[in-house]
Image (cartoon, one colour):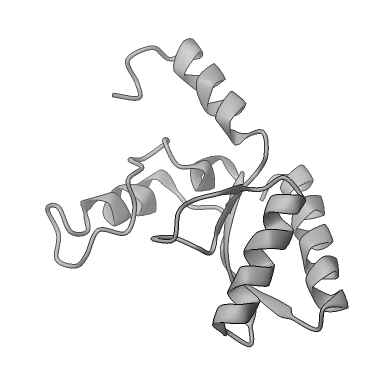
Length: 122
């Protein structure tokens, strides 16, 4: 995990703890091979679609994302977790992936990668 993301995640954990909510870290860095396998799921491999990002397109591949869940896992705690994450500047995906938190700089990082490697992100 990128050091600046670690700091942001720590701030989120502190904010949630103040509200008596824990947070479990599920997955951070992800290899391009794992990302490719997840992308294949529901397309060319069994299972349901779990990502729209191919290898190298995911913020996980760059250490700029984390998947989390609140503890205890309740609808109220999900609402608080997402509100606190947004307040701290995390990028959030829709309800289809509520526990995915992206580093605030991810959109600009991806744009820079697309400029540096034109055609690599089709």
